[in-house]
Length: 264
Image (tube, rainbow, N blue to C red; front, side, top):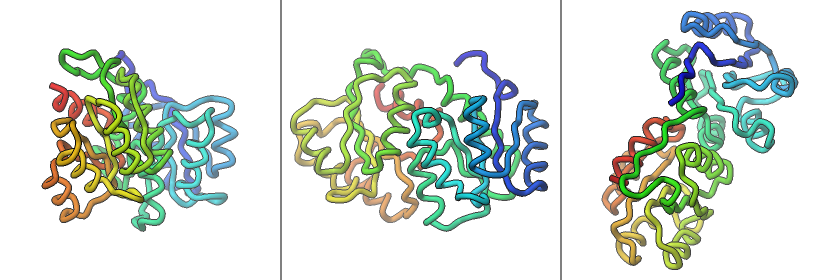
């Protein structure tokens, strides 16, 4: 990584509550972060980002003009803001609100109230996302590693692809579901597969099972990046031969370490 420090970050904080703004900005100031722009709505946030691009957006879930999930999706769909790291701080636990945040590639989802160490970890993830180390892939340079990325969410694929490209990977093929993934495994050789679990047509478990039992690439490393937390379902995935499982949202540092381990 470069010499970029947490204290160097420019943060845009979106929070309607003045009390919560003081709490979060106070934590950030305690960590040496002085550059914190504060707004109360999504409209103000986009106006702010149009003038000065932040290194990180920290948002509440419930804003006066849209939800934090809607805000992140709008950011991801706009080339001007799609690359900006996003962190949610919310007491919301409902799947309907949080799943879009996970799929769209948040750096972190922090509870309200959160612990200082949770914020510290999320900020370290931000630094790793902005300026990551090139991953160690053994004898094959990262730019020559052939990766198949399988995920039905276009935003999730886009976010994961950006993380992988930041680490030095260039040869990335995308599939929208397991069936497309099967077709590509039949036609091409890959060095690594990154797949989601929940997908239409053929889910991640069925796709992995095909690769392990019916393809000519049975020994390929397979990493699953998923928001699924059901232990019984994940146990079934492990039984069919997944090499590693990472959560959504994921820590770029962990992804780098896992890929390095798998490739070596």
